[in-house]
Amino acid sequence: MPRRIFITGIGIVSAIGNNIEECLISLNSCKTGIATISRLQTAHNKIPAAEVKLSNEELISILDINEGKKFYSRTALLGMLAAKEALNYSNYKYNKTLRTGLISATTVGGMNFSEQYYKDLLSSDKHKEYIETFDCGDPAERIADFLKIKDYIATVSTACSSSANAIMIGARLIKNNIIDRALVGGTDALTKFTVNGFNSLEILDPTPCKPFDANRKGLTIGEGAAYLLIESEDIAEKQNIICELKGYSNANDAFHPTASSPEGQGAYLAMKHSLDMSSVEPSTIDYINAHGTGTDINDFSEGKAIEKLFSPNIPPVSSTKAFTGHTLGAAGAIEAVLSVLSIKNQMIYPNLHFSQPIKDLSFSPVTNLIKNVEIRNVLSNSFGFGGNNTSLLFSKC
Figure 1 (cartoon, one colour):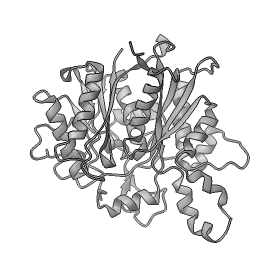
Figure 2: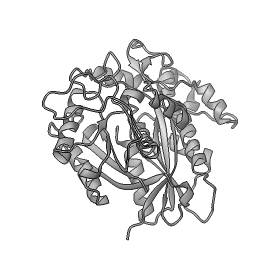
Figure 3: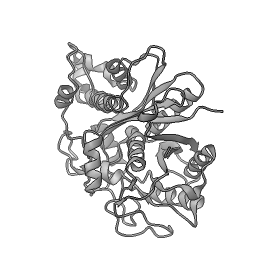
Figure 4: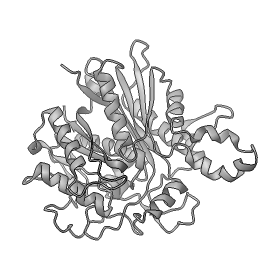
């Protein structure tokens, strides 16, 4: 029988908090992290975004980094902070007999520095030390060095499903006896490139995003990082187990370079195969943490996929992106951590900013914080450009 995969550690930094405790406070008080851009220097400073409330210098101080002239991108620093919390949460101890891997996801890598110094680099070597931070693999290497993880290191970049895929890949590596445990997740910093890029696509809401609302106008860009320590059932210590990663699946509807299919076929397949893998019936899903970007196409497409799989008994659905913004390569891991916390704390998060149902969808998202309700199975959706769709199923042990 395939080895079961347990979550034993979680860590997060986002616009609603710099750690698990702070994020839970924001979730319990229904406090969004979306506000006017203040840290990133951009001409689009009237567009709302979900920024982490720590400067790079503050991150370096918190991490107590003292490594001479090494240069760390914001993406790497955010990842290091969340990854460290995940290991501390789990009471992680180095053991040379256990094979430990790091599967880390990102979309922008260290672009925050390369875009800042690009013009200078064309004419001089003044900032050449930042060139190596540009690579998408750089954050993973920095995190691995910081935490002394050496057995297996990989980077995933599949747009907005990146860190959900990192979690899935880590689980597959464990099940195939390549490693015993893995730190899995993703990190992305807010950059001019992403703000300008999504603005050029005309899918940034000029107000805080409104997932699943009839008057939605687009997404709200964000930044952050989250990691989970996953371990095989052979080594996970019972007192450290939070819940189980029971199912996962990736499916592609191959419809369009950026848009999902109107009927949500890829999203449907990802969710269905995740349930099939775990032998969990649709009727036993207690909460769906939806991808829910707030864009016209995504929310309708995902809604149709949910209807197809779960009707007539659709479970509570909400998108936490109205709290954290859309954190791109980190989104899947941030929402995975929030899904784990949903099980641990027996709570369902509200879909902030919702006011009017989408025409031709038979359900509306949860609008109030629900507490003290039995949560056994949570489905977490992450869908990326090109139809790269991933669903993760977390279950109470």
